[in-house]
Image (cartoon, rainbow, N blue to C red; front, side, top):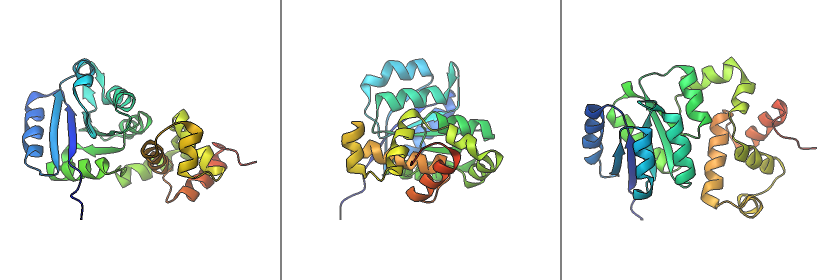
Length: 213
């Protein structure tokens, strides 16, 4: 049996004590190696070439913006990495920003470091992890708004699914890697609160996001 992949983690966190505490706790987890830290968006941006993370953990509140900007920078700079947002503020608009900016997961700071470590590993292995209660609230508040959080690329992938293209077909059609394609599909399922690819297509058709005519 192959050993599980070691998650290379970068943490972007404003508060030095919190950052030191997270780094120390995660360093004790044999599944995780912290490869870099930053205290602001500008510092993260300056250190991007120095790192090759599998997971970027970013706080929502940063001194020069929000974790959403970190998420967008990380998605562009590390296309195969996964982004996890953490925040002490778990209001709906924070979750929406996390989803819209391309995060693969969201964890409240009140959930504890053990859950954070487990979520880092899950996200690093390709899962999307968002609080079920918040996702239900988001879905119930306005189902069409969830579709509006899809990126242009995710809409292309969703349209390809609706046209019955396989992942390998999409790799050639859209010019992206298989891993990136699967990441987009997982994000689509999470954003549409869909149970399967077929369910996502049906939701998208009903909402007018894609066309199967």
